Length: 307
Ligand code: PPE
Image 1 (cartoon, rainbow, N blue to C red):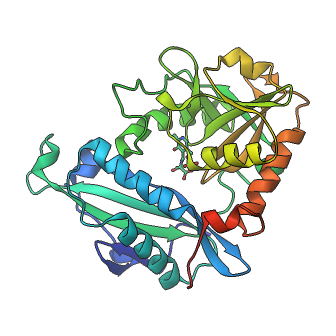
Image 2: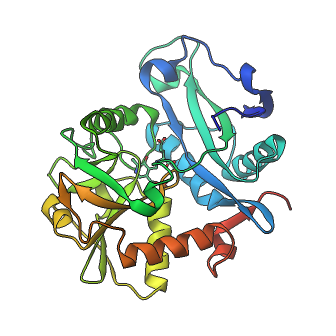
């Protein structure tokens, strides 16, 4: 189960996997001038269904706007249709989808207006991002020695490819130290997010998450807040310090790739019972039901690939 597929959609056409290439002098490669999404398609009783496809494509278009692209060759509806076409062409029941709008310039320089946006959409069959065991057992995390982006240095609402060197610094450090994932603090020292996930803590039955000013507005995060409120939990979005994580009853992370995974240890401190807690478990269960078409919220959030 690698990242291979039969076809990648590129600029309006399905291209064979091996032929979906860009040139060495491409500006996206040299300057990190791309914006991307991570989306999941789940297998359901009504065939493959994409979770919150419109919201993901809206965020992609917003990322492009934040980076400074002024005219895109495709709108949200066209990008949604192209995504479903890519899944159908590859015959996937469940997959991860990676759209990318990348800059191309015949005359590379640091002015975005020297080039124009190109668009690709890939899909591949991808299992549990943090490992199969993590879904049940949870993960061990460290606080990264690298600071998350300042809101006026890199744009935190945009999934800009270049921004991810910050995540790569933290993730690599974390892995080399023997942890599963890194928690990143914002420039003021408050908890921001992980390298590719948002973060939640539970204390005395209340669910907390850092407010969105300095983090990516995760679509899984939003879904989890809705599901948690549906279940009657109080959810508070407010600044969180690292020591609040240490003494939380439960901590968990959310993301398209990672889905919903408990954090059972941070900086060598056991969180709560050291196992996935009851609140995390209940929300994880609701999330899994939702994405598989088995929850009252499914109808609103699933986009079926085969009409
Ligand atoms: N924060 C960051 C920095 C982030 O990259 C993601 C998604 C999230 C939060 C969660 O957002 P959402 O997926 O909308 O709930 N990270 C994507 C890329 C991971 C990667 O390794 O690449 C993802 O989960 O698809």
